[in-house]
Image 1 (cartoon, rainbow, N blue to C red):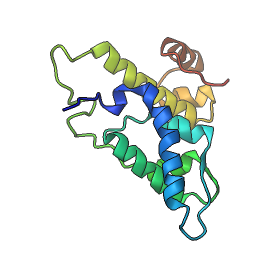
Image 2: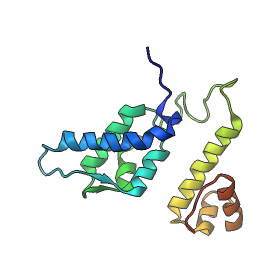
Image 3: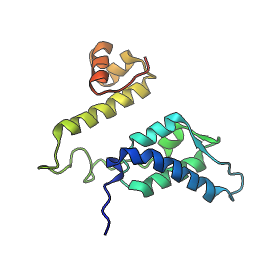
Amino acid sequence: MIKLPPLRDREGDVSLLVERLLAQVNIESACEPGYKDKLLSPGAKKLLMRHSWPGNVRELLNTLRRAAIWSHTTEIQSDDIKDALLPENITGPLSILNRPLGDACDLPKILQEVAQHYLQRAVADSGGNKTVAAKLVGLPSYQTFTNWLAKYKIECGN
């Protein structure tokens, strides 16, 4: 038996897998009527990289298949990926609230994951407007939001 860590713990592997699996999807779909090879937009790839992949490689492959089929252009966009992602089970054993206690519990890391997740969402949803993003996450000002971005090493683009 070979034990591999879950995909969510192998961030460096996700980028390579995305490229390889998309190539596989393109090869598998080449014979389908009207299908054209797909590429990923930078935003779509970034979204794939941020996802936790509870279903590991199989879920990643199926997400790419759905996005390739549903995409109306040759470039898969962020919205195509959002539509293709399965909703994460918030009550499952790997959710943020149900992680095991003890040696495996790292509360600072968990809090960092939560903060990074919501800060990145706020940046994306606000189009990079820090004042709007601050309001989205309940922070009092864009200066406070900027401090949080710096603390959690998130780039906003503004």
